[in-house]
Image (cartoon, rainbow, N blue to C red; front, top):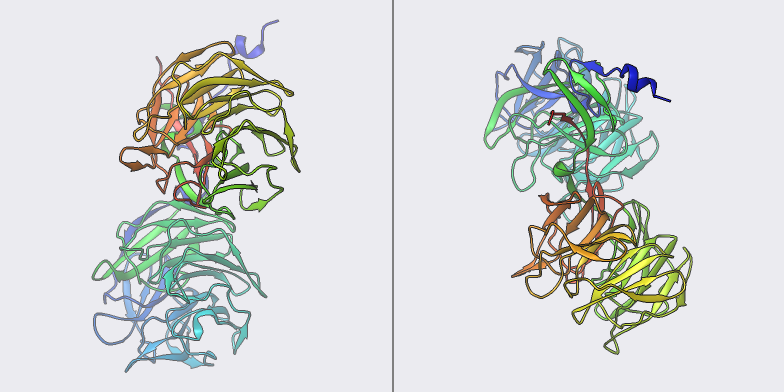
Length: 611
């Protein structure tokens, strides 16, 4: 019987714009009216149509200047009573604000607190601990002041109830010159200089009214008074700042993680301090350093209504007159740092050992052979029961609850082994040994149906596991060791790269269950690299190629390789996991190392073209 859709066709949704991941993803910065007095280190609060900028450093001395913004231009209004810079602020408009603490002439921190009613400033109850370069959140009658300089204010937090300040629970990571946003019972602190030792941090903490909890770090570590916007911890923007140079990066925070969105037009740091804007929908940043003091203003806006992106969408964009499909965008994917291993090592067992959110790191070298076995759950590594026999460079195949491994190198005493073990999620059990002792081999398949491929010393030997015994089968065409692989199953897999050292080879061979066939070679020759994924969606990453360790990463689509974004850290003899190229995991390796990286491919709308 014919399908209705085959006879009548189906409807494709028509949209005027492409789908986006979030409101912030559709946002952008645009120029606004410039300050009358260019300055850095000022206080600031409000929105893109009703903002206030006060105090600061105009190039020398201290400023008391106060300017009101109406959405197009700034007008000078009544000055704050105490000239200062590096002050904090709270408020929601140009008629309601607090100017909190800061750095005052001739050169000391102050605890002065002033309230703005739309026409004048009035000194009210001081903060308990004088400070500058801290962070703040909230409104004129309910605010939060946290961290700052100098010692001992780095971790101190005070809450304002409209008439007095009360010290509350300190932050977990003491710092200054970070960003802050939210409400006095629902705030976010991010970035800044952590004390001690005084280095920049990407650390993010959320305040729930009684305590601080650490959550997902910013993508770009930065300090020097980061710009901020947002009235709730689930809707925050962080922008600008300083890494080793001035940056324009803008990130959106959803309450648990940060996502990079459109950059500022002008990279700068130390602009007006305070939660200036509503967050994803609205933000304003005036003044700052870029690299000299500037008075320009930028306004952030994002669409109030948008169509959410989902994988597998098909739609017609009526504005560009194009058909679009939504897919994971592997060419645009990047590697991001993740939680490190508990035990640094290299030469752990080779083979795709699970997925990006469920992986095992088994054995390795540190600097002699180890039996350590660690489980990754997508956020942390946990040590589990060890191998029965310490070794490095064996082959491993399967999942975190059902795995087989064979071969490897025992050091001491310094020899290849035929030893094989099976993992049931709790314990390793000795099983039938492989026939040919080797190391630097690759495991592919599952716990009950696997391959051990090639290995050192330069063997082309391949063995097949049926759940109870190993049997020698057809050899690879090119004998080599320290290659990598990816598999759909033990009868459908690829084996790529490998010796000789130091440069390695580009060779790639495909196994169909009966024979090996050479198919599309990699672009980069390598040895001691890692791989993961499936035959039609694989990654090759890291390794060694003359003259040393490399960060190279390539994507295989079933016929050819394409270079994509490199690892953050060049390394060889590393481990890899992942069931597809859109979500790979790299761990360990190097000299040895404990570093871990995740390959993250976001969704993208791709134009469909007729062929």
